[in-house]
Length: 341
Ligand SMILES: [Zn+2]
Ligand SMILES: [Zn+2]
Image (cartoon, rainbow, N blue to C red):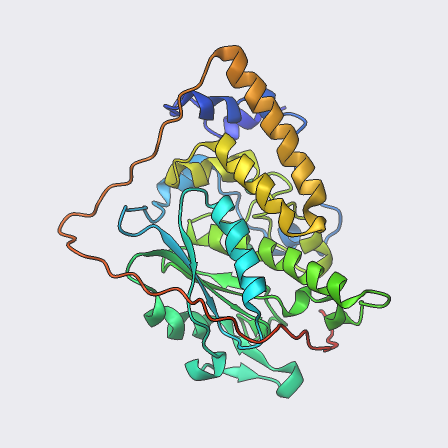
């Protein structure tokens, strides 16, 4: 059987001994589930995406991080989104993209962008492509990426029913909708308290946000393992995704964000306190942390190499957009029933 380290192109290119332990076969085996197709309606058989190996990722020349362009921004496009929801998204995201600041911009309403829509009132869907085109001018100068978020359904192609999210691999912008992450969207919230509904929306929303931002780091859909970067054709398939990156996607992220992976796992484990739905994820992180700590102690590896990103030539001053501190109205989850194709 092919070893994961082959898909990773070995780990000889890694300078940091701590990273070498993370991308070792010993760490990977038994910790990550290889992708298995469960039915023909899933993303992989439907979309026939070519796997993006680590060498293919390097060839794609992903956007670089600069000291003056390393902030991730969250822009709410819906006044009904609560500050609490965005703050929890921000918190998990800051641990996920460890070492990069994540800031929330002032909300604007999607209607202000004047984008194409289809359907009426409660079943309205906005064009994700047009949201990217129109919201592009809002990207702050020091942004590595900006993710737009709304509680309305979105679509990317006329012949598609909907998309959960949509992001550009190059243009540093993406959008995601958490409308379909609300169990009441499918009339599936029977017996759930409003807190449980809120918790579910938060948990699923965080997962899709980290996924869409992953695309902005040049990561394509993962076909190797059960991984947060898996594509999904339905809400059921989206639920199969774990909240973490598989070793291949993690190595891609590590190529851009040279952070200490043990410290990243520790920050993520702390961020799991956001919701009890992260319990299983927290257990996974704890086990990974214990293994790496033992490994580092046994090998006497203590040095943490602090990343230094370059400053682009000719850059003088970069103004940062003011993050919002203003809380907006509490999130309301609309009860809309739609058919999934
Ligand atoms: Zn995706
Ligand atoms: Zn992956």
